[in-house]
Image (cartoon, rainbow, N blue to C red; front, top):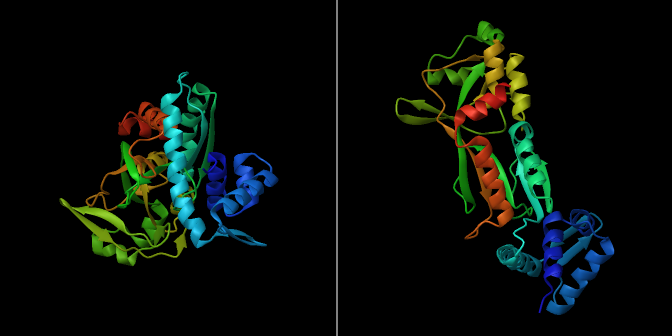
Length: 300
C-alpha cells in the first residue's frame, strides 16, 4: 500500500521540478520530501526522478505514476471533503490568475474567500502566460477571453466585451482603419502570434495582425496603445477608463469584437472539490453573470 502523503509529495516534486521547490510548496523540510520519494522508489523498484544539479525531471515510470497519483489524491481529497462532519473547507487552493483582471478584480474575491474559510490556504499565481493546470499542479484557473477546446472542465462566470482601440495621436499619424483589410497596414499590439476575431455582419472573421510590440501583459499593451504605438485588441474592463478619458478611441466599430467570457477552469474530474466549488460560488456572487458589474468595478 502506498502512503497518501508520499504520493502527494511525489506529485508536488514532479510538478515543481525538484525537491527544494516542492518542499517550499508543501511547507516541509527537504529531508522529509527526499525520504518520502526514496520510500516510493523502494516500494515500486523503479527510479521516479532523474536528478541533476539543475533540478529533477520525471522518468518514464515517474510520468506514469504522476498521472495516476494525481487522480488518486484528488479522489481522496473529494472523499474527505464529503465525509467531514464539521463542513469546514480546508487545504491548499492553488490558483492561476490573469495579471490585470486577477489583481484588480479576483484578488478581493480571494480575500473574502480566505476570511470565510479560515482553514483554507489560498495560493495565487498571477500571469498572462498560458499555464498547464495539470502539469503544474493547479487546482483551478480564472481565464478571460476565448477558450480553446481542451479536456479542462469550464464554468462561465460572466460575459466579457472588448473592442479595438488606438490613441488619438496614432489615428492622427496613421489614420483609422475603415475596412477589415486595412488592418494589414497598421501596427498591432499583441501578446504573441494570436489572431483577432471580429464580426462581419453575423459572421466571425479571423484576422492575423502584425506588429513590432508584443507583451504578455494586458496592462503593458494598453500602455503601449496610449503611447501611440498601434492598435490594441483588449477587453472593455481594461480600456474603459482610457476610452472615457479620451486617451483611447474605439476604431473599426462597424466590426465589433465577439463577446468573450470570464471563466473558472479546472482539471478533468466528475465533481469539483469543495474548495474549488467555493471559489466558483464566490466568483458567481461577485460578478453575478452580469457584464455591468465588471464594468463598474473597472471604472471605479
